[in-house]
Amino acid sequence: MSDDITPADVESYKACIGRTQSETDVVGAHVAALFAATLDRPHSGMTLPPLWHYGLFLTSVPTSALGPDGHPPRGAFMPPVTLPRRMFAGSDVQFLRPLAIGQAVTRVSRIAAVDHRHGKTGHLVFVRVAMTLSQGGEPCIEEEQTIVYRAAGARVPPVQDAPRQPLADGQTAEDWLPTPVELFRYSSVTFNGHRIHYDLPYTVNEEGYPGLVVHGPLTATRLCDFAGRLAGRPLTRFTFRGEAPAFVGQPIRLVGSVRDGAVAVRAERADGVTAMSATASFG
Image 1 (spheres, one colour):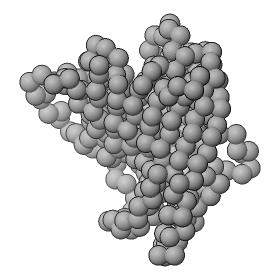
Image 2: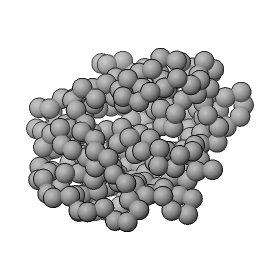
Image 3: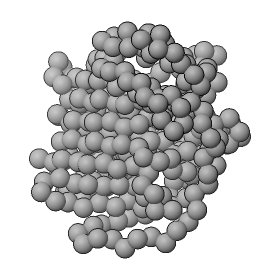
Image 4: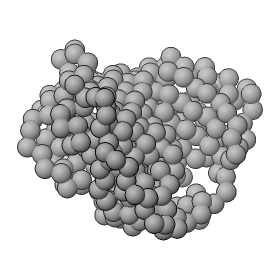
C-alpha cells in the first residue's frame, strides 16, 4: 500500500467502471435474530427491517487472504486502489419492498463511478457501487454506496466532551452509548474483519485513531431506526453521509425532526461534532 498514486493508477481504477458482480443468498431468520440482539430492538415479523440487509452476502475470503487491515483484497471486483485507508463514506438506499425472511435474494452490484480528488490528507479515491437486491425477480432494495480510499494522514485527536447544544423547536433526541460488545457483535453479524472496530493496538498504532471506531453502517442503522420511529410509518428512502469518526465508549446523541414528509437525523459526538447526517422519506 502507498500514500501516493499516479494519473496512470487513476485511469486503471476508472477502467473498472461498469464492472458487475451477481451474488445469491437466503434471508435467514438468524440474520433478523442477530441484528435484533445486537441493537436491542424487538423483531417478530417475517421481513427484514431497513438496513438489516447488511447482514447478507457475507464475504467468504479466507483469513489468510485478508489484507493487513482485515479487509478482503482489492481488485477482484473493487478497483485495485493502493491507498491504505478504506472507509464506508455513505449510501443512498431506496426501499421498494421488504425483504422476506426465508426466501432467496439476489444482489447485482456495479461499479458506477470512480472519482479522484486531492484533499487535506492527500489523495482520495471515491468509488460508488450501485446495487439492486431482488426476490422472485422483483427489486426490493436499490442502493448506491460510496467507499472512500485515502492516504494514512495525521493521527486523529481524541474527542473532548463539550456541553450539548439545546434542541431546536420540533427536534427530538435520544442517547446511544456504543460499547465494545456492540461493536464486536456488529462486526460478527456483518462478518466485518476491519480491525479498527475491535483491535485497539492496531487502531491506535497503525491507523492513528484514539480509540475503537464505530462502524459507519452501525451508526446508519441506529439513525435509520430512529428516523423510522419518528416517521411512524415505513421508510421509502434513507440517505446517509459520514462526516467524522465516532469512538467506542463515548456518548452519541441522535437528533431528528420531521417536516414536509421527510425526516432529518444526525448523530452527534460528545464534542458536538456531527459524526453522520441523514435524511429519510416515508410513504
